[in-house]
Amino acid sequence: MHTTRSLRPIDLVALVTLDGRVYPNEARPFERIGLPPATPNPLEHALEWALPFASNRRSWMALDGQTLRGIASARRRGAGLWEVDLLIAASENPATVAMRLDGPLLQAALQSRVGRVMVRVDAESPLAAALTTCGYVRAAAETLWVRAKDLPCAQATSALDWRLSTDADRYSCYQLYLAATPEETRRLEALSYDEWNSLERTRPLGRRGREWIAEREGVAVARLGVADRGRARLLDLAARAEAADDLPGLVARALSGGMAGSGELLALAQEYAPHVARALVCLGFEPLAHYVRLVRRLTVTVSALRPAPVKRGQKRPIMGVR
Image 1 (cartoon, rainbow, N blue to C red):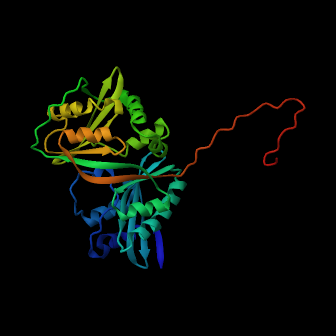
Image 2 (image 1 turned 90 degrees about the vertical axis):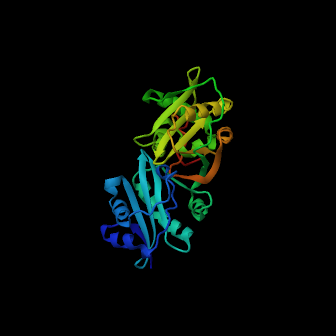
Image 3 (image 1 turned 135 degrees about the horizontal axis):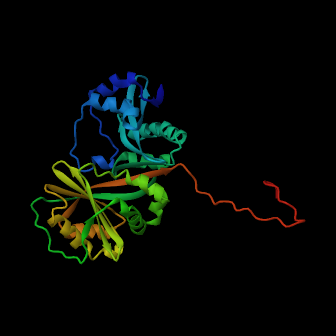
């Protein structure tokens, strides 16, 4: 019998054993990008999945009788946004398992008044097509780039320079997002400043992370976040198209100035921003992995009704009757 339900404490035994095999997590949240593949302690993760109140997370499992076939977990990233950060299909047909898990996840999201559900997966993952069938829409594609540690920094120059970002720069960063992101992506991810604030929480830099912005005449034209990944550093780079000529010099200045720290350098860039990719290529970066960001909107935007005055003697219309 096929069943799909929320996790319970009694499920810990099933989560720890999982048929004695290791199945990959198909979800790629920002926190895991750039980290080496790990073999986590099953009990530790089972406790985390089964105790959502301790991690701001909701979790579900798919069963065939008493056999565990899949696990999904979603984390609240802000008002109205959930991100799927765990998606395991312990089956020879992972697409079917993903569709079974998606139903209760969306039902819980609607009950919690969540307007958007987001998930990042490998571009070649079989679950990408399955999630699209479930109603998720491809918002953007991303490329993870890598640069050799001993590669000398290119002698690119720029008249612009970086400065540390502060809380006062939040709206400037939002304006940069509007200018650098295609309308079809913004329509799915962030239709307002509040939605963008929630979206920002899906890309946490961590306690050691730092963020810089570059400005021209008081307008933010580029943004660089640096996240610590142990022996590596992950650069999260965004820029306006009109800053394309300055971008190689800006990134070179960040690398030579120690802003990115030491060790292996990784960079995450949006494929809708080819000028960012060109700048990374100029500095010796090479593609390492490709991802797709999928979003499902659970709300519908409607036009607001505007009351109109009725003239004296004019017959009033009856709603629903022509």
